[in-house]
View 1: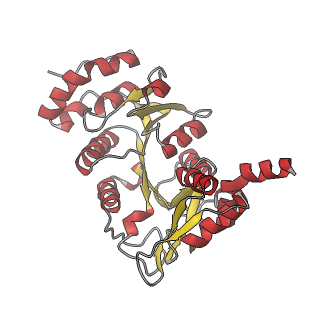
View 2 (view 1 turned 90 degrees about the horizontal axis):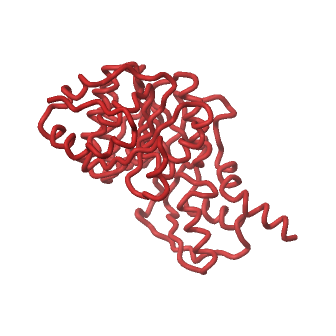
Length: 319
């Protein structure tokens, strides 16, 4: 028996239990029989309640018909009619795809290896059956088993961390799609005024607490707002392929955060040096093959400025 089509969005969650039984007993292909034609310029962000996902939601909302998923934070998202509760370990993404019928899917979800891979298998099946593209938010950790040089878009990934291996497994799955059907957007360290790491740094400064830095690690970085602008451009221009959405330059990890802390406050946190290796090594991705226009690129100087902008304004007002 096929899963019924449910028109009102908020009724979707009520039949998750029965649909999950079918999800575990029927092959994904059979679910795809239910898929209706997509609605153009409609975007579904899987993981829209997360740091990057929510930044993308806010960036794209004025220009597209945007829907999103959330896993927790009921109070913030449960009453929003364009947000659907989705827990990858419990639910099938197919029900939401059938309800929203997106022409663009942005995947920014996290989870355990089995459920994340299963979800992306279903997404890839969906994309092959309808007029839809998949944008996957990956990261620099797909190269973390390397380290002698920065990594570019056409370099062969090699991962050793659990996160890197999972991201790489999803990338391999997505790269089996026709080229015009996908975008893999690899991100470096994400900074910015409201980024978790900058908030952590500010707390360390305020309370004179320890803040870990890695003197032998060389990184690239960006801000959440720049990533959102870049993804917006990629969607608007109908681009495809692999993109390294990072700064155009690199810096030692400890120098980067020392520079940021100096702009935030005259006080300093207690920098705790952590040496994972004795010699310098890179966890840095750089753009080279798929370069965006100049005004959509960013340098580390701009990353530092964007990560401390509000603090500089407050300091000027106080003078």
